[in-house]
Image (tube, rainbow, N blue to C red):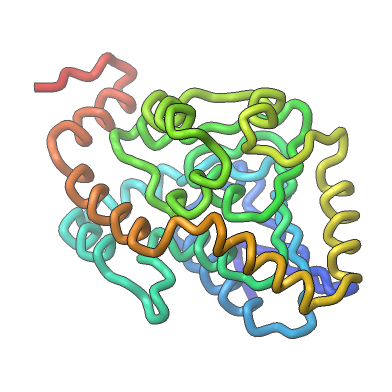
Length: 264
């Protein structure tokens, strides 16, 4: 059914495997579309009571593939229009739906992170309700590397986890953090020698409990910690004022040419 995802439903648990291991599961345009579609499709599957997400090949997700960046950059005006365009039910714009679709699931979503979760990868992991990290896993909000801001629904997840100063530091610097620091900050729920096995155990446990109780508990906590949908709009508005303009383009060129950027 999908080119970039493998989905298997067993014992009321949907195992969602990111399946582009040769690229460390970096997200291309097809990946964006399939993540959004899969999340929205599972919303209507009454047999699913928990979701386990992880990456094939020992890596969760290395971020956006450079091919996708180049494709988006080839039509800056079109990209800005898509940043402002909302989907039915206010599920975010084209770039937010791949994560918001998982945040909106009524069942718990558990991410098992091996290898790295960089850029779009960490934003996808943060869309889960729980995160099991391998002891050698690394995470980074890496959009600053490309002169942009994180805009894939991070406004819905990060306020629940970090203080404002911690969030600003990680976003502004794009600094890579190891698993132990990620756990100390609150980005990881648990550290694990075998995150997939431990996350699967939790998923099976939650799937065996009262579906109404689990769904109600998630809805209650999400509402208490809700950042509100206005923040999704703000992500798009801010990004549209940055992307494709001189400072952002200079950041990209300097990164690709391996030189220090010169901002005027």
